[in-house]
Length: 399
Image (tube, rainbow, N blue to C red; front, side, top):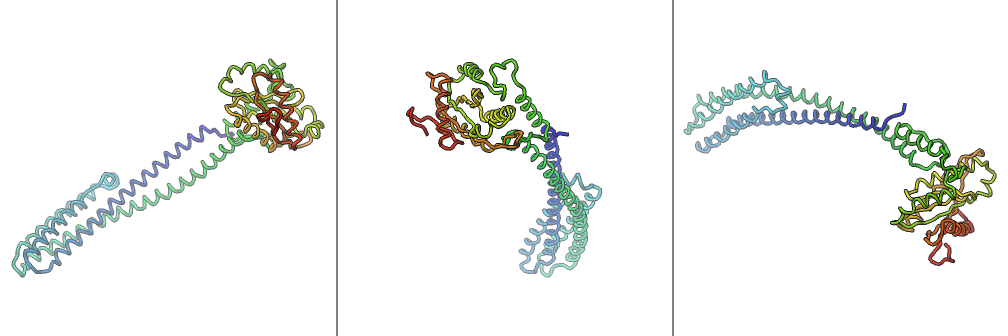
């Protein structure tokens, strides 16, 4: 069953949306981990501040009191910061465990702070042993509550790390699978597009793996096979291209639309016509000219005309805004024919073209311009073939 390009890209949107959800979940886990890490830092700071108060060295009583008061203020701030619960934590952590721990920490912290302030208020040295004992007792309860909240935070941190690890692994595997799957699909689509756009260099039938490109190829094939019965008098029956009458008819029809461009004319002749093609069947010769017409069609613009004359010359009427542009397209046609293979009953053959290129001046008819171009074709064949000869500024000078 052929793929649908529309379905492929629709699935890509769904896959990318799934990846975005996974990245969002992983980001939430990382933010949650950051919150837990920040709380642990604040709890660790409280440990250090408690030790700082108890290890305050005796000296100037007033300076010691100021230092203890500053440390108590730091403890109060650290307790408030460690008691904060961000939005993501409310989704992952139950208040049944967190709230009692916070209340106990705040109470023991307040008791420790009050005991420390009472101890520092006695400016006489040595300090009261009773007040110091109260501070140490309050410290024990405070440190216990700090450790309990640390354990609870570490447990949540480990759980979040496990979830983040699983999420990251799943996201990595999913990304790899999506990449490999759609890389393969997009390569198929690109190959189909390349098949539809590429020149037929082997003579084999083109096949596609996507519905849309397959439809385009089949429609192009039907267009090439069908001969316009209503205009049979204007078409060369062997190739399906315009004959001379058809060329003149289409040229007169499109003449009014060429006002902004210049008209150029190119005539092509197969170099191996007498040596190779004369031995082929009429059907094979017709298929060769039909394929040449298909190659020329790749470089055609809306106002261009291609014809296959009865003497087996191929004529191209080109409407371009510059001589260089027209000449470049003619050279591309020559190179494309040279690179292509043509399928015959005797097998694949290679051919080249010789061409004559000139500006179609208004005072001369199409027939007269074709006769002039045929002289240029002979000059090209005399120079070895597989090239285009063009008329330069002087009428008797050829290149």
